[in-house]
Image (tube, rainbow, N blue to C red):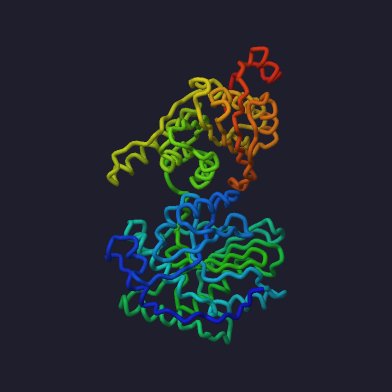
Length: 497
């Protein structure tokens, strides 16, 4: 069990943080603090179910091993400050934060009052120095790249308060804007040197500068806590405010302190991202636009190779093929949909990326094309596609469960026709698991289910299915072989979804 009382490492001079100025050298390595290199733990939120995929990307791009948290959708990995810029190149993570301290088995008191007093006292005992230094280095990096114009942009993250009744529910609550005093009689421990050094150095570096603004966001999951996330954020945030003499501000904050509580696991961190990294590529959204991080996870699952022809027959806004064309650009992508509005959104999103790349001096185009078609009668030659990857209608916000019983068998059969026998693959996302499994079983051995990743999509429990196209010969539905394979299919007329 990790104890709350901790011996802090010797406090580094916080003046090193101020040495990172926006007008300094443009090299990313220089922004890491020159010769002063520290090692910290960075946490990342990832699409639920794709934790292992994110860990693979981190090992591939950064060269370190990531630890997957007991709290689904979070991973942790070590990194040195001179390589901090690399974390922003990751495509499978939503949000990033630097870990101040973590407790695997935090002992909460039985009463609410005692638990909240413990959280108040914890603020002054934490080793803030390295995390604050990394936060400043990260801020300098983003200023150089033009990602930050000061403050948080005035945009607060949405928060929600849910019932304490079940462990499956998660709470997220921010510190109320009203100033909150720490518990009476609270005294600063040896960790107070962190606050004093940070505050003093900020005043010396920028005379007359405004006080640092902050907020605390508490993410809590579990049913054995005597307090709510609101109460935890309020009391812990009040202690942080007292310790650093910062000012609470829910919208125009400079620093976001994270208090993540999952049963007995407690992680305190400082946010490195102001908005989720999944907000990329898409400028024209549809009713069911997939997050780019989820698209990336699906693409990694099918392992695109150079010269592969990759098809998204129900592209919606084009989120999947766009992510592929940018990150796996040795393949060629065909995005199609039967809805003209969806096709227009995809075209607009492709043009938006092209303009953005052009503004940065890139003259190369994207390996992607867009088509409007009937999903069940694709204008594509038989056995000519290497990978099919798409987000199928769940029957919730798009289509209906009843229509899926006709749509799924028809589209799976057409996908089998255009996919290369023996080597072709399909990665299909759906929440209608019963209908999908039944449809696959009726394909006459054309598809083999290899792997399923269970994910959370907008609060819905869905599956990402990896299928392999078998070597079975495709037979037209009206042939004797085709009728034996799917006895009730009839013709291949597709329904509108």
